[in-house]
Image 1 (cartoon, rainbow, N blue to C red):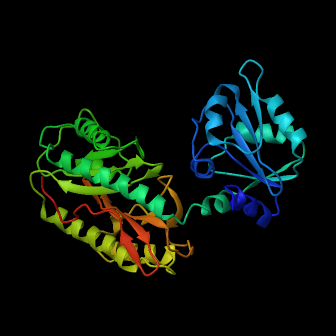
Image 2: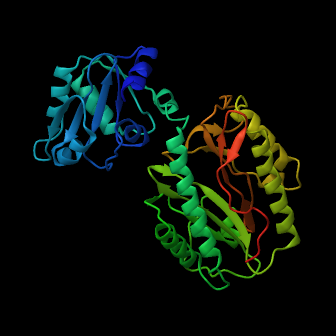
Length: 362
């Protein structure tokens, strides 16, 4: 099987002539290298039969050589524009129906395809294309495990330095520095470091004008990227002391997190896991603080299939990795989230994250 076989099969199953990939997780999986996303279109078209072809900016050709591309390349320069390259591709390859990555491909590239092949039907094949990377190989799991190891080492170092009076932004800078010092190639995403009432915002931004106070919840949601794969970890701690309410909320979230791990196995559905995890939160005195689903798939992208949510009856299979991250968020007060990265195995699951989850007061 060559590196295009799976993509040809997606096209065949959907009744398409080809699929088109642009820089992003699927592109990197297929070609082993990614490229910056900018104003210059770079597109690879994989037909059901025959060799692939690509439209590539001229300035990227020396980098393009590194992927050992097997088909025709149509390059273009800023001075002349890219429409000619797309037209040349259209003369080279007759297409009537093409599948694209609906969550990744930008509108101007969609328009370029439509202009080059008048009357072409452009189909959103995001789900089918992305499902190809849902089941991780042993090498991919090893890369993700290294990203997690780096992340956890960084967090342990930051915990040693946190103290009352530091701002969220100062702690965030410590975390980023520790990630790279421990071997991160990139950050999986911009980290969340949120204290006090900011921790009740699931996607908070660190503030440079808020100093951590005694009794604050302090939430870390972050991850390293290594070998093209992401870690995604959340731990919530308390600074100085934790109130009785904070302890009860924390225990509730931890019980929900552990319920997700308990049920994670091949054959379970995303719906079943989320229903049980959220059910723990709903049965608590804090049900009005629920804001999010249980989690999402994790791999080359921080958010990918499977999405662990009610109504998603996707069956979990060995090799899939998802986040188990229940949380409770009291707006204006504090929030708690605990997040692990969970691998579905042949017989159950393996939790890839190992950082302690017992309630911690720094």
